[in-house]
Image 1 (cartoon, one colour):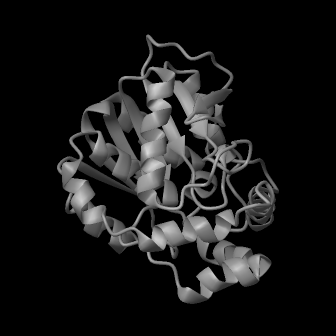
Image 2 (tube, one colour):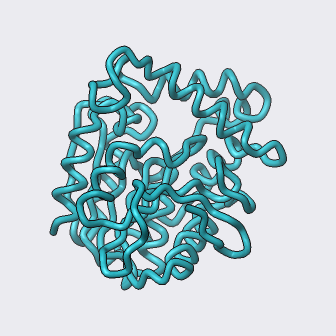
Image 3 (cartoon, one colour):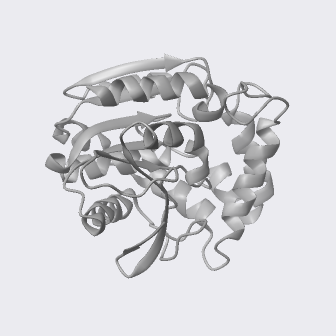
Amino acid sequence: MKINVNGADIYAYTGGKTFNPEQPTVVFIHGVLNDHSVWILQTRYLAHHGWNVLAIDLPGHGRSGGKPPETVEEAADFVLALLAAMGAEQAALVGHSFGSLIALEAAARAPAQVSHLALVGTAYPMKVSPALLEASVQAPEKAIAMVNTFSHSTLCPPPSALGPGTWLYGGSRALMRRVLASNPKVNVFFTGFKACDSYAGGEQAMPAVHCPTLFLIGRHDQMTPPKSARALAGHARLAKVVEVNAGHSLMTEAPDEVLFALRDFLRN
């Protein structure tokens, strides 16, 4: 579905269900050079088990119009504007990587509006190497290859993710190329990485979050190392840490484990 937020048409995948104001809502926020599709298994399950699902393409990404957010804070304000546009007084926020910082900042800015916070593949600080920042501008194909090398711990996913025989590296590269090409005016690769690298509010934001917080981390994650996620969890009021056997691309490398962790967390 398309939602008008701040004058721009924003795409949100709903799992094939119509938004029902009587049901709880969960918003899924993707990472750099990703889109709504990275949450396909988790969103479809929740949409068919009593939740309104809004798996968004961030502004200026994929099927969404608008200007790509240049900072985590700007993106967090967008998420809160999205909730207002939907008339959702409260929602759960689930974010992966860059999206986890966005969800964290939104929950800190409006704690009464967030019922649950799930940070998937997160870290703070989320620094990006100068070489990768430069490559995202000067040699995006090289940067995409670098990100995929550090994001995966296996070549093929379990059947419940994308199907037997799927090549995770190739599928992820194709998605990243598609998202990069979706906005010829702005390099959303560099913009997203720069926003992650520049975010300095994590330690202040975490104690301001009032709701339960799930830290869902990959045991073999080289992009956002588990120790950095655990350090951030130390600043949370109500933290639960779940570690799965995956790299940074948790949703495709450990799809069932991610789904079950989110399902169980959102039930409480």
